[in-house]
Image 1 (tube, rainbow, N blue to C red):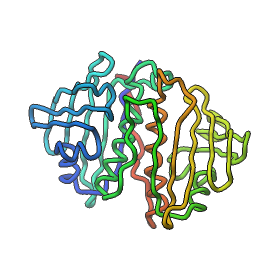
Image 2 (cartoon, rainbow, N blue to C red; image 1 turned 180 degrees about the vertical axis):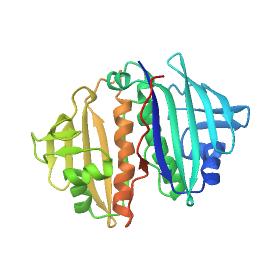
Image 3 (cartoon, helix red, strand yellow; image 1 turned 30 degrees about the vertical axis):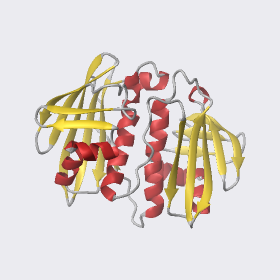
Length: 283
């Protein structure tokens, strides 16, 4: 069974600016895809290594107006539907993404490329907001590679970033989901919290500098911090997984979360861009 995935975010720009970022090929190439071609109202295509099954464009435009963009997107032989809806709100824009044919089971198993849809869109929307805010983008997932690594500069001291990565309350705040962390080797790293969540295991830790968490089949996540001209360079790597089936869904979700880690430290009046999701419906 698949669900209608809904993701909502408040973006830092008027609706007209957001629509241009969604429909101008040059802007799409800046934040979404390696290649993009748009000729409204006939054509809306993107492809390349940052796109699932991006060997060629697999989109077909269904509808486009000033507030809505809808296209069919064939993935793993199934035609899915993706829709962006823009709602102006006090100089900002609430973007609602609706995506058909998403299955959490496929995301967990990696049995279909459609399993990446939730976190692919989360990372893409986080990068869209970074593009609109004039911030450097997060590393985009390369769906042609099993080398899952990236770097991010955060305008904050190393000790503050370390605390936000290892303190359960702070990590839960910026990631937007309860996380229970026991910051010692052998400790638990529990998505959903200690009582209800899946408990991964801390397998390596250098206080103030590096942390490695073993997630089982999806491999080991490692975060390393280094001082860089008063800022913090965060290097993050996923390793130890089956390279014939890289955990693109888990990786994209982790990287998407780091957008809010950066904003958490760099904005005095920080609020996450993510809004409460609508209840999923069967599709």
